[in-house]
Length: 297
Image (tube, rainbow, N blue to C red; front, side):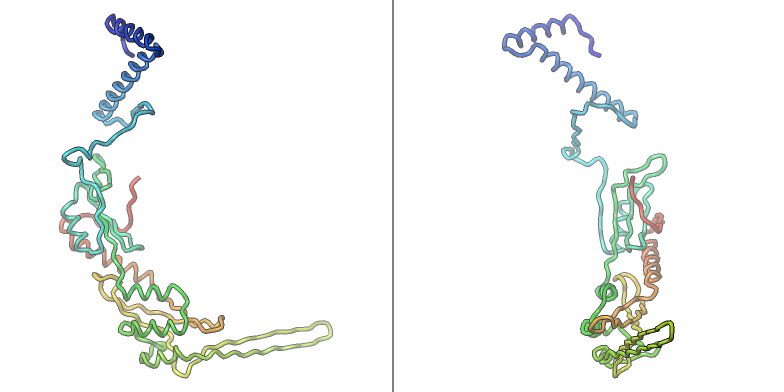
């Protein structure tokens, strides 16, 4: 509430008389005073709320809040997101910029790690917007393996893929190793054989008919049933051997190959454990490294 004095009443009367002379509404001065008073009161309320760490404050909906940090010589606090594909760079940045409560979260499913550098604590929680993130990049060989297992593959594409990545591949027939040349010849020369058999039976009160079709893929050479594929999933991780099952699909006009990595989820979990172990080794301050992910609310 604004208390009117004799001086303010005289000034208001003079201003309203002047407004009336120029054909302006006499209530405009009162509106100006009211708006100025509202702004002053809003500023006072904001200052008071900030000083007392109040949860909420009511302000006029026509006011716009402007952040003046960009005009200051320095920022109020560090915030941002540093991203890298290298564990060493991630660990070095986290060590150099960690604050109170810094915690590293390792997302096993996506081979990612996030360091929340301003996590804070229960009494003084941080804003959680100053981050360092690590995403391990698949090696070319591992990306080729994942790409080959994501779709059906023709004879030609299968043979070319095996040739391109031959240093990483050992063809197997069961548990017996096959030479790459023989395995490629078997893949390139596949014959689809079909056999049809029908049976017809007549009885006095019923008729029974049945049909049976058998389709089989054959080759003059021994077809591989498995592949052993050796590669590093990421540059900083150890080499792993993936066992890949080969299936031949005969439902189309031409034979198609389907590759399936056996126990892929286990490989991913072990690779994530290896990544988190490397992070623990390279962060000397013993910051918490937890399996999982974190989302600020």
